[in-house]
Length: 390
Image (cartoon, rainbow, N blue to C red):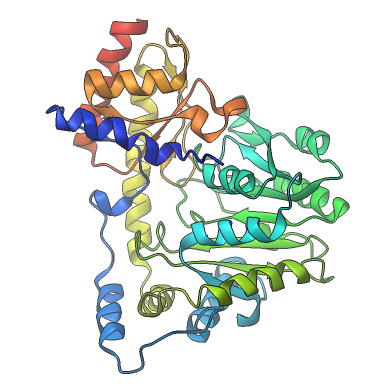
């Protein structure tokens, strides 16, 4: 089947524009290291040592025990949850985790509830394995809160899982405890796993983060995370998930995923050492990262809301914003994004790439570039909107 990953697809017309001599403002990919964020030196030093180690070679298919123990310790420190290294599975980035999980859960005709808008890998892999991604609305006027009533209505006898992305990509919403508890209750009632993607869990600009790992023990849970965002290790390809399942509902899922992990041998072994150290060493760089991101989020929120024909909610965490195109002369949001590249060199991702039903008429931008780059990019976007929709 055809797969369409809008975040990377938009790089094709962007490359064509660059070849014509257009200066690009790449606001499309959530890679902090492309800007003024840098992997802490002690992670790099550990990787160099691990590469030089005589103890190298293939690792444990579930993930090296030192890293799995460090993840269990860190999850307790962050959220007060009790898991063991046996509950943790290390993957080649979160993307592999999504792929393996959907390959295990989904048979042709099965359904999985996904956030709309939401990170497109979930729906793409669900479709790849013959399933149907059923979106549930996140309510824009209520800070993108998940529509719990719609979740209840859209569950069917074919529903295999309920997915939440918190903090959210692409909206940068952070969900409150009450909403997450309601979602957990629905999952428990229907005896399906709540799958919670928490890869941005320590990137917060206001309030506190409530992890789905803290939901009632009767909720079967799979919590997913990784090292590319908070730990500034994009491209190192280290992710993980852990199971919290009191009643053994997910035993078959664990075994099915583990069989696939054995087939693919192991995740990158030297990078696992760096990932372990990133959890155990100084964490001060995260506070500095949040400081920079909050300043850029505040500016982006103010600037986009000044542009005629655009409006946006404030980002609460992660590093995105998902503005609405209010005054829209374009046939589709993809046409908007392509025109913006051609005319101004500003590269954003069309909102329909995150959900046709609930993402269309929007676009995703990032909060990562330094202020001078953001100012230039949004001045160009301002000119573009005045020209077309002013």
